[in-house]
Image (tube, rainbow, N blue to C red; front, side):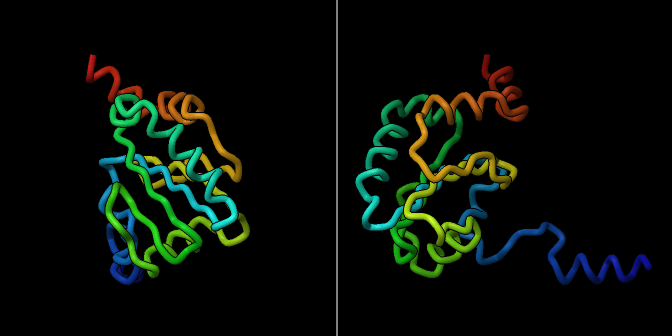
Amino acid sequence: MLSIAFILMLSVGVSGDNPGDPLEQFAWKNRVILVFHSEKNAAVAAQQLAVLKKDGKEFDDRDLVLGVVDGGSKGSIDGASIGAKDAATLQQTFNQTNSDFLIVLIGKDGGVKLKEQIAVPASTIFDLIDSMPMRRSEMRRNQ
């Protein structure tokens, strides 16, 4: 029985990391906000991005990086371009194909903390992050 479990761990990967995961480099270091949008909702996405970038200190204090995926064909994460394959992977992972606009907050642990099809105020995102146990620990350490 033990050997079956070991073989399963090897086939899945002990760490559970997906080698094709464009977010893998941020695991346990950053929280990621992804903004997906279609061409028709580019203005909504631009407003959302402006709201998020407005207070860079608040953004940076929470170890956030920003990703944008435009219609699945192109995008960027933390200012670096991603290819169509990575953009499609993100869309598939977060089931964005049924929506013209989507914002997703991913915690340092890789879990989805927020997923909305409407623009979200920065304060809502920051308050949510500040309520997380890992963030509370970070705030205590930084005092």
